[in-house]
Length: 238
Image (cartoon, rainbow, N blue to C red):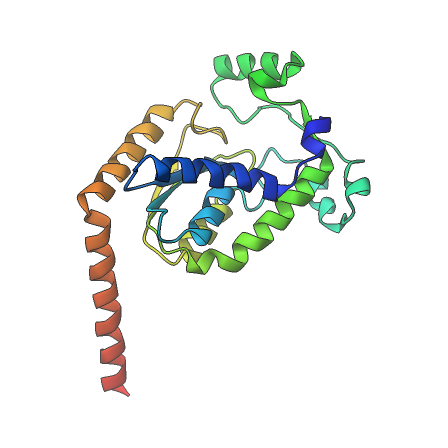
């Protein structure tokens, strides 16, 4: 817990940037940056900061807003908290259903979290100051999201207990590039672990393969041409 409290979103992002630079140094020509939940927000920021070297995005259950059905109503009051010392008075505890719909896997995750060994499944409760840091990160990303033009795969569960489909709809409307969307009907928040994880893997590999084949560049070119034609038609109509 003390180690977590000593970090901020810039530290989280620094680790993402370091891994990106490592992959680039090994000669990777195409780098697809993916993340689950808050990880997807960090991926978006990297895409905004490195537009020439991030080829595409894979966003799993993106969490710009923690507004899923499993989030307690009083969590909304946290928006009025602005100081870290005060934020730490409100720990954000992990709770049932632990982001997982599969009951067998849910039991395993709950046992791991309650074991006290954070290396197994994270900590039982996050200090409130980390949620403040998440707020700062989200504010930053919202300001730059329209400039993120890389193609993006967005995978989001319909019944997400942490982050509603509002997050998906916002990204579809706000991202500056083409998006491909997968809505899962039998998973909760942890889509990379839950019942439909194989679908997540398959669609991600398909997405990456099309990227390698240049399909997304073709679609982007066609989309740009259509926009130009539409603008010309509008001018003629005027």
